[in-house]
Image (cartoon, rainbow, N blue to C red):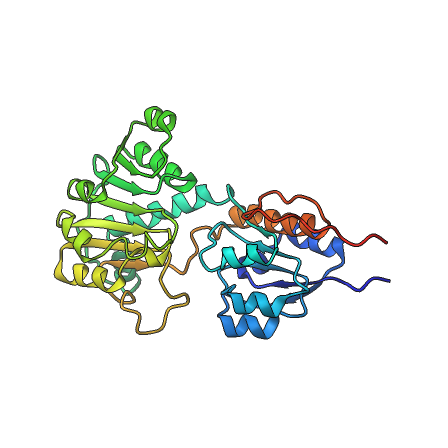
Length: 330
């Protein structure tokens, strides 16, 4: 009788939310190792080496982790779409299929983007907290109707943000290297090709770009200074897109009207992270895609990707061009 395949699962959303994804893995008879990520390199090194597959979140998948995992590791199934914590080039060089889950969380992340934006514009959190403590302090907020929003990154999530922004009556401008003319015309979205030229003419910036070398610290002191006084910045992309200290400085000076983020450059953050406790700043713990509906879609896709690849079949979505290894014949 063949030994059970061992699967390491580190994504907490996958583990915490009920759904068909659990049944799918059970039917395969895998031995499951569950850990609560995101895990650093040292933690991953302690776990790999005797696992056949991974379902990971934002864990550190470094060359050292891959070397330790080989030759046994057959597939990495990424829960979600962000691959910046995975050394994709090295994974590919080592011939390991890497799967991911595009197209499953764009609506819920777009909703969370407006949750952050509206909470800042309406001073929601401080006023709700005042009421909870018996205080009736009424602060004046802002409408978003008629405001100008600049969406940096017009992929699936950026497009969903644009649709909702138009529904709120906002003027929408988008930035992306590739451009969907049909979508832009349908939803009355203007295109910009120079971020610096666009920033002085926007009231709100929404970040949806991937983290790359070119987007690291995209929002820096110089670009913040270009924004009109009182503008808002929302980040549901990646924490590394912004210079955190520059954002704090702009908030404390009063130049930046508010900053809302579901992502930080360190997750979980240290207690002394500069954005924690900053004025007019709303931080949520990377929950933009953590709804029962979205988790169900992502988890099922991650599970199916893993199972298909482990069985020598083409997964639903593969992030690298590596042949799927065929299981040994009985």
